[in-house]
Image 1 (cartoon, one colour):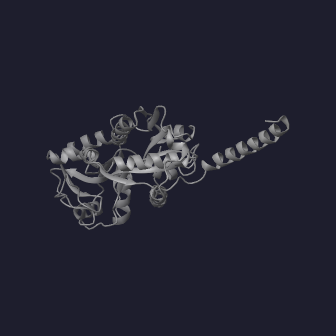
Image 2 (cartoon, helix red, strand yellow):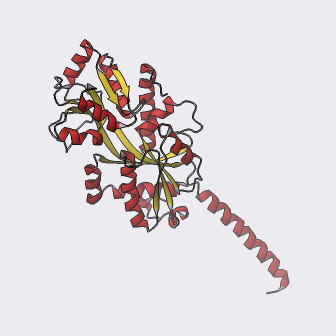
Image 3 (cartoon, helix red, strand yellow):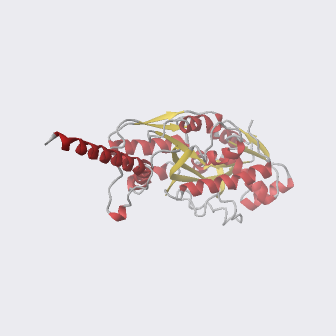
Length: 341
């Protein structure tokens, strides 16, 4: 090629590279190609993941959220052939772990296990150094679990209406796994609906509240389902109701709160997954779709149910659901003046 024609050619090539770079840059911001259009994964997710993923659980090992995170993480790690390492960071009412993830790189390699606790924390802790709604992006809701209203097996209280009547006559002791936790919020919701007032006894976890309930030091606990079901099946506790719209398959004879006369006492202690805000949308969508697909398998559903949960995948609406939960519990927290020490 003549030297005079080389320079224009080089200039054209340079312009093409600049244009291609601009297209690639904006492709990260644009929606991923829809499956219905026959497109594949966007470039940001083609080789994702290509290194280990850190799955932060802001609770102690062995708890409800930890169990679900390990179930999901193990199955996805096998599918993707990349490690998913569960990292327990308890403390600060689940805020310590959430803060770490909120401040992590938005590259898809740091996940946060979230629960109803995080929705209520937005109101309980107004001065957090991060925002659940601004610094984190909801990816997928994974599963939910009802609260189980339980009393000692020898209690004269036989139903939810009995419980409300007894609380109107005398001040009963009600335990929970701590101030501002889902069991405490459910108790507060029952107080609000029945215009009763219990003596709230917060514990550091659900297990000690079960021990004192069985021992007779407490009158009732609005318990996390997996923490009390074994005692109900073993005859040490009596279940008055489950706080979901449908009866639970493990306790088919226990009525729902609606059947027991309290239709507005619906409470789900759900668990889901979030990532740092700004994580590329194609990666968020890939993780959400992979988890959703996993939850549809019979083997995974059986494991989730055995752990006391109900598979409840929720992908695009999870953001809306989380914001609705924040609003719902903010009203109750303000009404009941719930404080966390």
